[in-house]
Length: 568
Image (tube, rainbow, N blue to C red; front, side, top):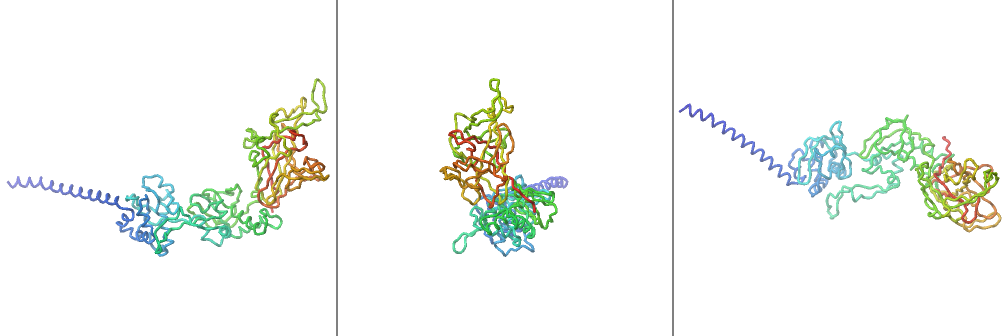
């Protein structure tokens, strides 16, 4: 009997033990399941409140008002730092500073560790970018210790430290007010609250909404070069003040002011604006790998020989502080190309054709439909004989002929206060307009006029022109900067594709038709621009003929304005 009882005990005891073990495992799994279910019923603030290691963070959420944000029905990801992260050096008394830090670790939308978007860059609720560094598996310098804790309105990622809140390029400059670049740009700035990005974090005692305020900077520089925008990535170089003055004096020296305006103050502002814009580069650029960089405006900026004093990785790019960069004037004040098809106005656009031509710049040029009769002193074979003079009328389209004296096609260009040489390509490729052998018919002579009005002056228009002989043309071209009796003229021949330099010609002095007379003597071939801004150009026909419907055609591939620059 004893042996039977012992045997039974040996069987029953393990069964009881196994039963107890299974029961314990079941209870733990059930408790875990219940715990997880309970968490999913709670918002992120309540879930974090159950984590002792997050007690400081929870208290700071309440202090800044972000606890109310995280109790809404939106979906969030919170990078919550443990208590150890709030050590020496963290100012937990400055509420405004805290709001900036707290708002930088909260992200709209739930990002779990399986979401690959988490490992690129994501944007926090206050607009700051959070970057993942694959080399050390950090998010703005912090590592995730506990992943993917779910809540009713998002997910919690517990980190070993506070994610670094990086300043934008503009914020970096705003904390370094001794730089002349900052002082100038800030002088243009007007701050207004950004209602879209600012976060409502509560209501004050008077019932007014409290915001974690995001300021939007409005000024001409930041609108053109948004180094304050978290959605734009730039590299910005700050030159120390001696380096700034080096470029300022180069652009605004006693011999020539390349950004001359109506007043000394405007000239000073335009010059400083240009020095500041010289150092904006698109994307994140490692300037240590280059001798020369090309900025967003296509200007070459030499870096070789520059001393890097500071490097800062910002939330929207990178900032370098260097001692100087001596940009060449020829790289700054560059040639200006105006495509023929980019005209802004004309006498009548029905007569102006944009032509698709593979040989043309941008594969487009323009031609104006009219006609002109020319007598050519060329030998040609007619019935076995050679004649010395033959008249021929040249058309673009004989069924569409403009009957307008000084038909104009208008162009505008932004220029510096400098001297320019004017070139153009005006290629007449119509086969009936030229005979290279000179055996059948002549070659159309392309003679076209260019009238110009300067920045800050009255623009070109129609008006009364009186000749030296006292005759008046009530529909002449006026406000030309060379006067009513002189303009730039280009000469060429059909069938010849070449770049033509325009020269100043006197216009006929008798009947005020503004037909060409003769080149200015001594030779004048420079356009002098006294003020920076936008000039207006009219390309006109009626060079040698004023006969109805025979005032001449117009062709243009492009105009090229080449500055005459002497490097000091």
